[in-house]
Length: 395
Image (cartoon, rainbow, N blue to C red; front, side):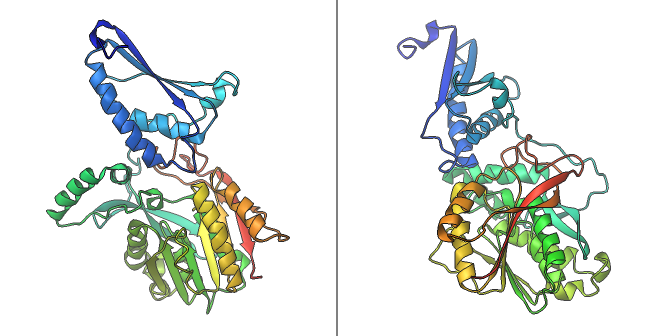
């Protein structure tokens, strides 16, 4: 009714109800970011005409996507005036305290407190060196996007076509061309716990990697790929469906870890790391087969149910081709249940259950649309973390 005479009202409330149209397997974090950006533009207009504007989010189910919705809406808030957001569960669907455990934080822009932090500019993306101790190898240094770079990557991932065109025009006038996210996935620019777990597993549970070809799906920062190469693999094919992780890995391998004395137990690091080759590859595009290899590895790629299902199909494809498959998964990945469900149907009678291996949390800043503050994957100091791991041999 306010449309007929909106200015006679002193207060306006907007209720957002999550429905079956908002499903975790259909809507990504960045979709929520775009949705809430439009909502916030509307709210900003209303704030000029109403003394009070607040939003009530009512959820009929405790979907993880609700947290992303809240975080995305929060990220658009004005620095001078904020919109209160109250999150309420449906009365019959559990206690409010469960809702409060969701991701309810604004975008992070914190800087590292380490004054000795070493940074690198990789195609316009500022990255920091992160030393990771890998069993039997020593310290491997990966490159991870800084807090500011993560914010920029999220903005690029969530930008409209018009905004992306504007970014491209700006970049065309600079010396460095900033890499663009083709599929809207900034997760590969930071490290996740399963990468360390898989890297350690390769070094301690396989007799030898010599003369083997290792294929990594979703290489991210490239820790597993570098560990495989430094561990003796004759060929490592590191793939990702985004270009940014591949560039970070290439730079880390050629410019950061190429000196033998930097890695305690490897004398010829540069030569071994030269065995890594990178390639764009989408596990969900089943028209393109897996490259031939001896072992397929993957760490923390099941961020969505659809990638879990796709990984199950790729697992069977690899096993049928005679490849061993090793998969690591940190706690809370929404795609893992779908992966297990699909794999059990594709491999009836086989033991496809994950085992638990010792892992550690990662440190460093994370944009809240990449990793919520309630995540168990990241902490201010390293903490023990149980990581799920699956090791399947060829059929």
